[in-house]
Image (cartoon, rainbow, N blue to C red; front, side, top):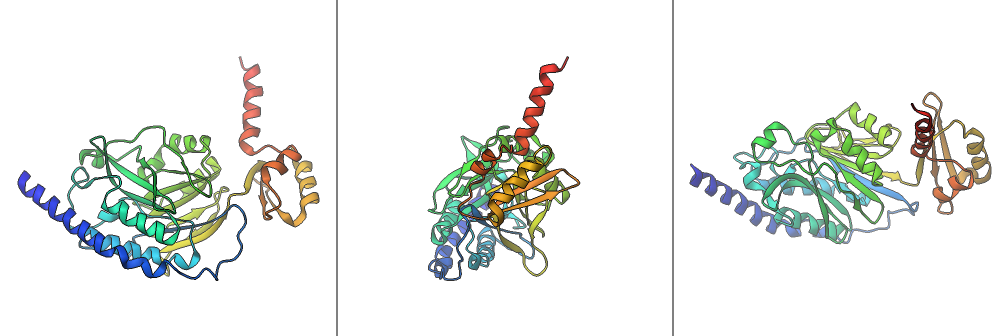
Length: 344
């Protein structure tokens, strides 16, 4: 039985690796895509792409990889800065796929190398979820690849399901890493991690501005709540529709559906989440000075304000300091410090 399993695994990986090698040139025609359709972007404007596996079926890992690359290519006219792929996408629905403990690859393996070529060809960061092997342990992972095709690192799912653990998957470290990209600091959580908020909070404390969430399911309202709780933009990439981009307020920026199973939309990271009171006059003074160079959105029921720079001349850190306006987290921290001094 063990011999048959090993043969099946070798054949599966052999076919996948060969197919992946043959498909390396499949996106080369897009490498020199015209940039004439790009407009001038704001200094911290990031175009984020994500996709689902909705409607994709494959008989082999190579076939699924090729179909996912085909869907990635559909985002290229938008010139994405980063593309996020769904959890464990190479193996989804593939018949006779060996368990995670047997299919895991050491990074960088054939799958990562394939998407590193895509990233380099299209000058685009890629988040590539897969089963990874590290120090003899198997993880449900997401590998971050930069625009040059270099691996920046990997996140290992902190909270795998019981089924995953029984198939050989090891829980990742409780303290998740952040990754420094050319546009900002990002973090990752995977699928079942959504049920534990500590990892999301740790990422924010480490400076994450965007948290990517590859998953087998869409997540629904849980993601909206986590976005405003962490003050991070959240991007999901899932097996079924929809994948979504959610703003720091919890409002939806983009969502896939029956007409397109992918999304690509801009997010301005030069944006701050403010507690309006007692800074109402400060905010009015800021707007009086900078006018159309800033956008201030007041959320009256929540007592929040979002201050956004829409000009290359305005740096939010400097402007908020000028008018003595703390971000929401600083405001809460000040309150807690004052409370703790008098707490019995």
